[in-house]
Structures are given as C-alpha cells and as structure tokens.
Amino acid sequence: MIDAATLTRCRHRVYLDTAYRSLIADVPEDTGVQMRREAAAVHRLVVKDALMAADPVGWVVVPSELSHAERVRRTTRALEDGARYVWNATFADDAEAGRRGRCDLLIADPAGGYIPVLVVNHKVTDPGSGAMTSPFGRWEPDADVARKVRPQLRDQLGAVHVHRLLASLGQDGRSAVGGAIGFGGDVILVHDLLAVGPTYDARFADRLAIARGEAVTAPVKVSECRSCPWWSECGETLRRTRDVSLVAAGSRADALYAAGIRTIDELAAWTSDAPPEEWPHGDFAEAVVVAQAWLAQAPLVRRTETVAVQRADVEVDVDMESYQEHGAYMWGTLLDRRDGSAPRYRAFTTWEPVPTMDEARSFGEFWTWLMGVRAEAHESGRTFAAYCYSRAAEDKWLIGSARRFAGMDGVPTEAQVREFIDGPEWVDMYIAVSQNFVCPDGKGLKKVAPVAGFTWRDDEAGGEASMAWYRAAVGYDDAPESDGALITTDLSQRERLLEYNEDDVRATHALRVWMAGEDVLRLPTAADLARAYR
Image: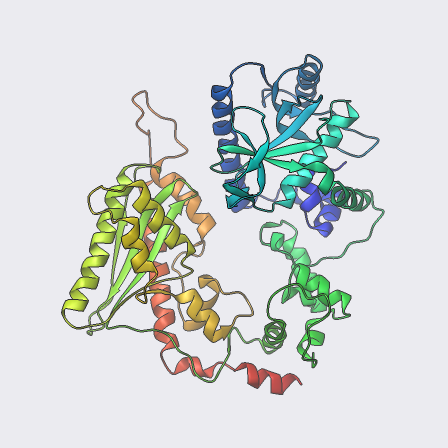
C-alpha cells in the first residue's frame, strides 16, 4: 500500500520501511522532522479556521481523534451528501490498486466530483505571473498576474494521488485539477493534474513494485539521508563500497552511475575535460576535486595558492536566531575593535514568544548599536565591516523587520537596510569560504569552522535543536493561564540559546582570523590533488 509521501521518498528507504519496519520501531523520530510536522499541523489549523471564516456554509470537518474506520465512514457520507467542503478527508484503502491516503481539504467541483487541496507549510508561489490561482474563500480559478508557480513536485503528486482515490469512489473532480495552499498563502494555487499524471503513474508503479518486493534497490546518498533512521546502516554500506554518491549526491550520482562511474576512486581519476553527458548541475571539475579530497581525507582544499578574506579595523560578527517564520528573537554580535582587547559578545533579545511587538524593541536596539559602532569607526578614520555566515536569513529578517516595525523606535527604513546590506561593509563569510575552498563535507559553518580549530561548547548545537530549546525557553509547550500568561518557562534553555548564538559568532570570527593567517596554507590545493590522483 502506497501513500502520497512515499512517492517522493528515497527508493531504498521505501524497501527498508516495508521489509524491516520492526527494526526501527523504537528509534525516536528525528527532532527536525518532528518540529516540521508539528509546525505543519499548526499551519493547517490556522488555514482551516481562515477558510471557514471566509465561507462558513457547507462544511464537514472529520475529527482527527476518531478511529480510521470512523473517519472513513464520515468522509464517505459527506461525499455522498454533496458537502461543499470536507476537511481532513480520509479514504478506505484501495487494496486492488495498492493506494491509501487522506486529504486536508476537498472542495466540490462545479463540474462534478471533488477537487483535492493540500495545505502545506512551504511556499507554493513566487512573485511573477503565469500561475493559476483561486481566491482564498471561494473556488474561481483564473490566471494570476502577480504570482508564478514555485515548482513543488511532491504537492502535484500528492494531489494526483488523492484524485485517484476519489476516482475509486466515483468522486474524482471532472475538471481534473488540484490545489495547494502554502505558507503565508492568501490564494489557492491550482495544478493541472492531467499534466503531471504520467509522472505520477511512473512513480507510483515504481514505489509499489519496491514495496511489494518486485524491484531491487540499493542505498544511495540523497538529501533525505540527514533525517533518515536507516542512515547509519546505509552510510556504512556506502563508505565500505566507496560509493560515488557520498561526494556527489542525488541526481549527480545518477548521472555518474549512467556514465559507469560508481566509486569515488573512479571519479577522482576522471581525466576528460568534459563532464558526463547527463551531468545535471554544478561544476563537474569541482566534483572531481571533492572525490580526490575524500580519498586524501582533506577537510578543505584551497582553490588557489593564496587565500583572501576581507578584514577591517573594526569588525562585528552577526548571527540572528528566529523561530520558524514567526519572528527573529535574537540578534547576536561579537565586536572586535582589533586594538588588543578581547572581542566582546552582546545579544539583543526578546523572550516574549514570537511573533511579538517586542521584536521591534530588540531589533531597534540591535540596529542602533550596530550603526553606532559603524559611525564611531568612520569618525575615527577606521574601516568597518559586519560579517555573517550565509546571509539569506539575516537579510530576510533585516528587511522583514524594517517593514513590520516601520516607524518604531530605532527601527530603520527598508531603504536604510538595503543600502547597508547591498554595500561593501556587509560581508558573507559563506561566500568567502566558497570562493577560497572546495569543501568535501559541505560548506556549513559547523563543517568548516572546526577546520580552523573552533569547537562549539554544546554537542547538540544546531539550528533544529535550537528550535526545541526555544520552545522551552519561552514556554511554547505550556498551557496558558486564564489571563493568557504562560505557566512556566525553562530559563536554562535561554542560557543555552545565548551560548549557542555566541559560539556561532565566535566561529565566524575564528574562521576569518584563520583564513587571514599562515596555518591555512597547510591545506592542499586543487592542483596538488590533481597531480596526486592523475
């Protein structure tokens, strides 16, 4: 039996989950997966309430706490009675086809039958044009001049899956379309299910054959491995066989397999100037260097003889902490005046659960302080630079906070923020690392800073772990008192978050100092490795 999630899951995991499920029965769910699942559940409830408020007539809500059999019974009755909307629709297993599933929302199709609509906690559109959307509170699809589709194959396959389940009941929408409501969505994105039907059929047949033991699979490294309970076993197999997917994962591994390159050794010895015919993306020459580095156990490889990194007389490292899409609760900084004094850490925080207007205060204080340090440096004739690692998140919350809290004390205008982040004094250390090094184990700060000798004090430090710490730090998991106040918070988790944030800014500082020093020259260059393996 195949559900919609299986269609985009790793093929080998489908086999393992089916054949050996009992072996991981007691393995705790990955923290990141759990957090995303919980956030998605909250998002679905928010969307449901908004939809029902927009059009309160004709709803059937199937309670999640009911047994599967009762949810199926209520869904079937709602469809037979011609309900306009069915929330949390649950279907009986289609044993003959091997299909099972549920759907967040079914909307009565004006042409007959029902339209499946998925409520997902990711973006489904981007600014642009060409998408087909329907208003949030009614089903009236039309071309959207303000949005373009953000490709999400899993959503399209999921909608087709439900459409096929509805077909088994004679309730499939005659217009053959499906919908998706994404994060922050105020419209329903409309998908043409006929267009994706052939892809669905191929995926479904493949996964069903695997689940039934009719197709052979083998481990291969993909992005899903990071949170997969089978990774320890698969990873060991891949390392033992020196499988090329360890250094070129996903579709790049598929292209290498097709070219007859199955091991890291074979990739490292590649001599042709041209990549394999089906190479999908990325610099193939760099992939070869990564393979050579893996064999040499080199954690980083210099692209050239010299390493360059921007320095300034006064330096500030910045690291922002946010909770999902709700808000930025911390702006951590490390000030190094480079005058012989020790760098000083300072954090600007709000411990009111985000979103909260108190973000305006902490953000305004952070911005005022940062611009004050910058102005002081300029007035004394010294250069200034602020550094972050992978600036996308910081840029997003800098601009977003300026918009949300416009006009409040200390809060800059969006133009002021853009002028700063688009200028030469806002430096992304991720870009500096990318320009100077090939990184066999990845370019994340947790991967490269240890090469510079830096270690985090908390062994569990990481973005996903910090989400759980934050929930405890502000009492997200506690029931509210009658006056709305939170019952308890774990203050120790606040200290843990501050320590984690401080270590992050100290890591970017340590990395920069190391890159500007002599020890970095001990790393091999790409040319060194090429000579050794060819």
